[in-house]
Length: 194
Image (tube, rainbow, N blue to C red):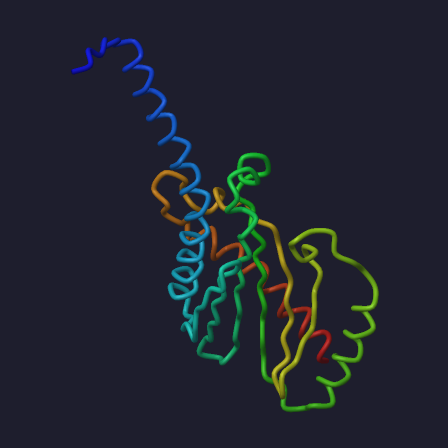
């Protein structure tokens, strides 16, 4: 039988290394879960403010949700958070995600939609993209049948909306910021479709 000499100092060091590893591991988990908590907050904020959820999907790099209100206006939310889930990215820049919001409304006059789409095509020929996220604050018009939509993106630090320890989202703050964006989208879309 081997005689092993027990050294309490080495044992204590091992325990510290394991604890430190678990602390780092929890940072990995936090970086990968905070976007899910944010999306839960986005859904709750919309439901608490008179919207009904039509669907919600995730594709591994983004979460999508579509909502409709009693006036039949639709909004679409896309949370692009893949880069923010990376621990190195999260430690250097933060848990940043792209939040793409879209406001949609039905317009029976198809000629207005065609005119808006021609204008949009011309504006898309200018500009570029220098990151994994769409350019913040740039409005884009799209149409499907008699429904026109206007969308834009903003970059958000997820920890500004979700408590990093409890993962509880601030639905009032989320709604206030979504509402501000929706108002601008609706105003721009109304102007384009006038």
